[in-house]
Structures are given as C-alpha cells and as structure tokens.
Image (cartoon, rainbow, N blue to C red; front, side, top):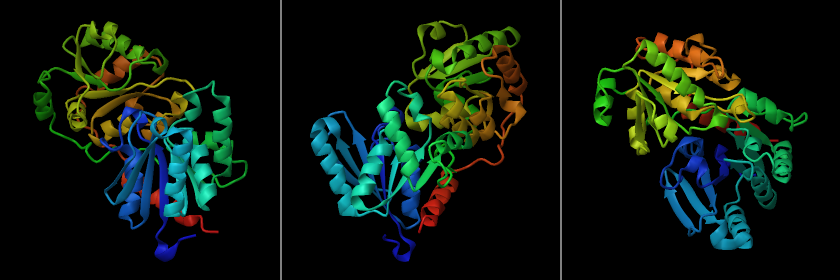
Length: 365
C-alpha cells in the first residue's frame, strides 16, 4: 500500500451524469467536492467517470484532480472494462471508491481486486429503490457493501440500512450531504429583481421533480389552502411542472435556470418547501435542496421523514407530517413573516471531506 508521507492515491469511480448533470461541464455535489477537497489535502486523486451516451473518451485536470471519462456505447463492454482497468492499474491506487449508484459498487469491487487496492463504497440514496426489479444487481450491490473495507452514507438511516449487509464488519460511517459553496445568502430584494419576481408578494418556492411518487401533489393542495388566508401569495417553481400545476392561480414558473441563478432563486423566497414521501426512496433521502435552502438562510417547510428530521435537528418550526396539506399551509403561514433563519449545526463539504479523509487513513491494517 502507498501510504508514503500520509499521501493516499485514491480513485473514485462514478457515473458521468448523476442527477442529470454532466460532472465535466457542471461540477457539483459530493461527486465533485469529496475528490477535489481530498486533493486539496495533498492526496493524489483520479476520478473515472462512466457514461453510455456515445461520448468520446476524455481526460483533463481540474481542481487538482485528474478526470477521465469512458463511454460504454462508444467503447463496447470489453473495451470499456479494459479502459477503466488500465486506468486503475496504471495509477495503482491505495483506494478505489465506488459512488453514484448501485452499478458502481460491483464495478469498484472489480477494479479494487485487480489493482490490489482497498475498496470504499459511498451511497447518498437507497439505490435499490431505483430499480426494484433488478434483483441480480441488488445482490452484487449488497455483496460489494459486505466486502468493502469502508462504507459511507449520506445519513444515519441509510447507514443503518447498509449495515444489514455488513454482518459484523466496520459500521457504515455517515458523511453528510452539504450545499455547494455557491449557495450563500443574497439580498432578497435584489434576487427578486434579477428574476423579475413580484417585489412585495409572499413567495413560496419548490425546486425539483413533480411526481406522484414523491408526494408533491400535496404542495398544490397546501398552496390552495394558503391562498384562502393569503391571497397575494405566489408559488414559485423551477423546471417543468405538469399542466395542472401551471394552470393553478398564483403559480409562477421560472423554468430551467442556469446553475448560477439557483442561489438567486432560493434567496428570493420567503419560504422554501421540501417535499418527500414515505417510500423506499423517501425514507433514505437526504435532499440537496434542503441543504441549499439552509445555506441561503431561507425558512423551510419540510415533510418529516426520518432523514429530514435528522437534517433539521428535529426543529418543529420547519417540520410537517408527511402528506398533510393543512399542516403545510399552516407552517408556511407561520413562517412568512419570520425573516431569514440561521441553521445551527449545518455541515459543509469541508466537514464531510475531513470525515472521509480520516476514515480512509484509519483503515491501515
């Protein structure tokens, strides 16, 4: 193992488009900040990104990290595996870290075995909820969790679930989600002006996908109740909500905003809503949107799944029962005149990277 002067050679294996964002063109989240902050601590870090979009191979250096991209459809399965295996054996990492979805547990295990590296698995969601029908993949995922030298998860509920497959091995470590550095408080009046939003009306916001299995329809019911007591309130949405939402009086849609405008959209709000559901996905979801709203000091109303309660330190001012439109409306109304909120105990990517670094160093025997 290459522990010379406490410098670790670490190879991250990740899909190139997690959450529909290209990590080459739009770096963000744990997929970017864990590797780059480790590199900032002096480690040698490579990131191998994988896609299946007919993309050419790519190599670049950014933020102290060497980035490589391989594409399954361009290279074919044999060429793809040979390419990432060659990347690993040339680099000779101390650690191979699989992250971003269930495929990258077995794939990281395959690489670690072939280059004599330790294996780490990082999970930010319950990946088994994505494709519940894919039982062979679930088996390989669970096996990689069991055999890994280190497993990290975005929160304690997910960590406890993964520990079912550890069977007496080192417990899963919590490495929290965080907001990217661009998310910081901005002047609300300036933010509203920049996005051409009403300067004085109460603005309630939601950002993210609108789907029945996420429980988002309850937000529309809550907004209707809110408008009965606060007729000038507006619901500000990003993305492309369905037609029934667009037709609702008081709904304002900003569409798909450039990444740089997302902190502006949050800072324009009086209250940001975070809606999750009691599903196999929602019970282990640690919403990045919640981290981002907290970083912008915006008051939040969030459905009280166990992960969200943990993220908000059980602060009752911001929590509502799952699926309860009336409680959501009441909580929004109570926070409209509250002003900005400074959240205690909020984690940063630097905090998470230090935990991850310490965990990698600790596995030395």
